[in-house]
Length: 632
Ligand SMILES: Nc1ncnc2c1ncn2[C@@H]1O[C@H](COP(=O)(O)OP(=O)(O)OP(=O)(O)O)[C@@H](O)[C@H]1O
View 1 (cartoon, rainbow, N blue to C red):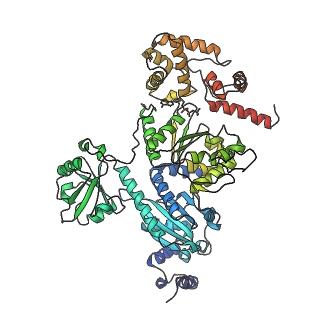
View 2 (cartoon, helix red, strand yellow):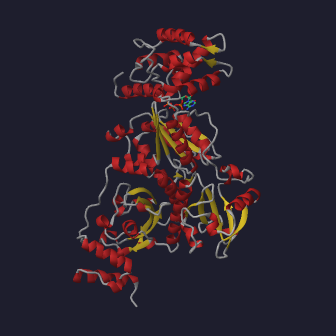
View 3 (cartoon, rainbow, N blue to C red):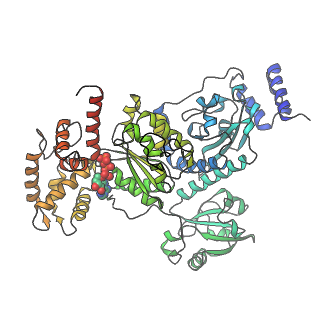
């Protein structure tokens, strides 16, 4: 009996001598895959150069797959923790073998092949020969490709364990892969990868059938919360909409296909099942061939007919926050952010200054149900030299001036909560590399200290054009792909259809007894609002002070606008098309003199000029840059 190693050596020798692989020395899947590679004209010793898609295409695909990526990333982190320290890389690719996300041990990222294994690489059999991702995508089945079974010798030091993920309609939706060097291969990894893939499939199933009743069932009650539980999606009338893979196995031979009725499968009327569900969380079900199950309605609360059930559930993204979103496009953004937050997907919020990026990040934190703190960090405000220590912490005595006892760092402070990285485009490039490493394994290493794991929801925001920054080498594209599992853009106030709701919300916050007439709102809505909601809030504060009564009308708006126009920036009229308040139009000297007049108080300067603190920081950084260049 040949050892596995000898068998592969012989297989390679036969391939070289005869130009065809020996069927008896390879498993059927590997043999077939080698034959496909040969018929594609691939040569084991001359692999083609790795193929990468452009950053724009990668980004587009990552956006398109944001739901499944969110689910996959959560599983990849768990998987990574389960097999951490064993020189592994966990990868997620779309159905065409395009690598979208990677989490790897540092030892793996340092390995020789690592450069060709990164988001954007295409891992089809046609490009990479027999390999975990490409071969699983072809077979639509889980596979292990071990060492010499790879068609190209350059991958012979790797073991790849890949499992397909199917969408609720049965189409291939992606591939999950755990790869390691052959020496680190672990027997249980295959099972862990298969379980993670099933978990992602179930997540897709639940998401797709949010509006349906979700019934979980198993022969044994203690298995209800596990991956082997069946899931049925049923509509209000008891018609089956879909069954997950486990349900199809448990109900094998029964008509559990879409369109069939609950009563075609179970010996209980749907109405009786729902009635019983009002009284009890779990109930017995018997199928048409007599198998007994324990069943539960997972999402009972969402159905009015199930109101009586009040057991604790997973946090749902529908939460009351101060985030006005009467514009349907914004409401959709808020909904997606809520879902992503529950799943701990990194979220990137783009938008002009004052459009509500931080407010939306706070909403994400609340929606996530996380019990830790919301920790906002302004990357533009931290000096480059201190930002790493501030974020990751430092040990006592790590550097001159380090606090006694060291500092935990903002990531640690946000453990169990949310870290909001505002103005991410201003993060120094060196620190971007550190953040990227953090996103690989979610551990922080305080300056001069030792590593520890943290659990944070990461929300970033920018009003800069990151694509430009990437083109100019100021921002790492690989970091962007990690931060924007969900990317949303908040439109400027002038493009929103809920101006009046926002204005009324803001005035009630300023003074609950005050209101605006329709005429006042119409007049305000005509303005350009370059400073967006923040600027509107500032103008409304001024209006509330100027108005002796409780109702602000068009005339009060007019008089305050005329008055502030005189006070405003030189050469800038307030009115339709006016009031833009970004750094381009605010003369830096004007900012600097206001800064000096307020005794170098950033908040007061921002309030006085009706702009965000970030704008002031940017003006001050500009001054610093000039100073550094000796231009002052
Ligand atoms: N949808 C909203 N509903 C209610 N208030 C909002 C909303 N969006 C923004 N605001 C208010 O507008 C002001 C500015 O919002 P925020 O600070 O979140 O903007 P930003 O986009 O983060 O600004 P910057 O880029 O300048 O930091 C805040 O007072 C916030 O409470």
